[in-house]
Image (cartoon, rainbow, N blue to C red; front, side):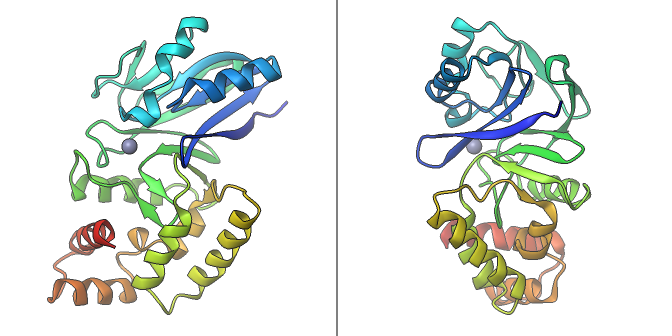
Length: 255
Ligand SMILES: [Zn+2]
């Protein structure tokens, strides 16, 4: 029996990622309880765990209502105040979900928020608002250096890792990537695929790390074309890879 992974859409563009095996269900970042409760009622699945990546309301808003009717463990970063947390986590910890026969490694991916974590097991990463299709999280609490470090950490995972982001932002990420690296054919190929999926109303997430490495400027700060774009933006030679990343992150905010 394999673990099935699917998403429940929430709000405008959030995805609540679900892991399911033999009727046991774990959910990642339930910002809204309603879609999860509807799924449980319709499927007969039983909730066994809630995993949280960071404290923002569109990732945590459903916890209280879910645990009222389903008193399950709530895994969340210890460095952030998240009501309902029963298993505070830090990078280097692991999360065991015996009902799903899954063990996750907890990665510290601070940057978007101070204590942001991601959940990784061979083949899948649940990264909240750290990586989006051709994009990365805004810097609300952390520094560009922290987020750059987090992306480098993710870049070192196996390239076939499926990245499960918490938002459908890929189409807008592609527009930015194209502006940075207009000569990169991989961006055009991915852009076509994203258009096709969105026309069918399908998610563009998950995507592979390999896709990100080939198309996302945030993972390509060492590429000559990306460095050239940063040089033009800064009006000077970028001092480091982090300098390139920082310029891109600021540029993206105003794009
Ligand atoms: Zn967030």
